[in-house]
Image (tube, rainbow, N blue to C red; front, side, top):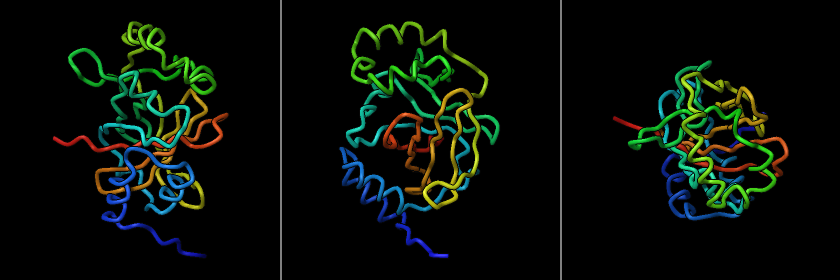
Length: 189
């Protein structure tokens, strides 16, 4: 068995600081492959999310809708999509109601202000207290690492460690030709 060299937390943080504004998809994938795996237990808690721009048609889309991040309560209890609610507090949204084909195939349309306005108005109706994903360890690109599996969507978010409180996620969605990359930073305090 071949051992893959992994980036140290310091080297990963430096790379991320240099590429936070954007990076080519192949370079983002090489960075992802060079990161350490994440034990599932290390993801417990609430995380603030942001995209890592790679030229994906989904770049900036979640942020445009007020995406806050994710919350991992346990292996069977994950809130995969938190959005900023009234008063700025994060609220879980049921992703089963997200029009996935629209987002995947027509992200430009999904990012327009009329569509965002409609989503903003109906988002309170999509609120849920029930977890809508699970946390598992999966083998992805030859490495066993933590992954979040959506209950109702053909999506798996796979995670690698950037540092103790920062992970890089690669969203593997059926029908999307390349992963969509995003960052999660642990909420503290």
